[in-house]
Length: 298
Ligand code: HSE
Image (cartoon, rainbow, N blue to C red; front, side):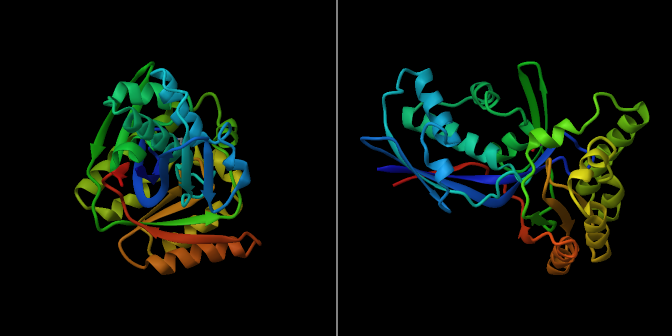
């Protein structure tokens, strides 16, 4: 008997909502876990770097959970299907962490409350704006205050899709945070607060013409864009092909456009902009995921 776990990708920030907003997307990493004699992990696509149980993040999280309850002697065979591109700002590590925690609690047949979830998840990464969408699904606003996390699900209209352009270079969140300043001017803080509130209410009221202004940002993108060649042109060309709002996805390197139509035209325009400077990229048309982590048994 095995457990199958699907965990969604997520896009955080959405422009102005830096370290605050995140939404789950219908692109999933999948984990199949069976009790076994030896620890073993197979990754699809094959990546030998991730096939060492002592280094594999999913396995480390799973073992940590078991250790909390004195069950670390148990051994597992895991098949990990990685569909979420790695280090591209789409919450791949959040999805693996959520998968490991949920698998551990299922194996132990224990209830997982939010506080326990966050206590474990934060040992690995500090981004509730990816972790919560991966866990709970939907569009969320989150904040971490000391050891407490507060979050709420927000309305997000079904008709808006996400065109995500994924360039073929990785950008670690660590690297993308190093370029941020320690302090920012008050006027930039005001600029962003106003836009986050406008973004949430524009979605609620379906006033999509406001999304372009609402997704402007002065807290992270102006600093991070030097790490992403053609950033401004990709954004400009997404808008000229009908995007409603465009931003860096999480810490990058992907860029996400929100749109109600012209999905392929927007995706192609973004890919072409990267290819003009010799950067290979692909685009995916995604939708919001409302379910979050999903577990089945066979
Ligand atoms: N809000 C975080 C950041 C998300 O932008 O650094 C990391 O994926």
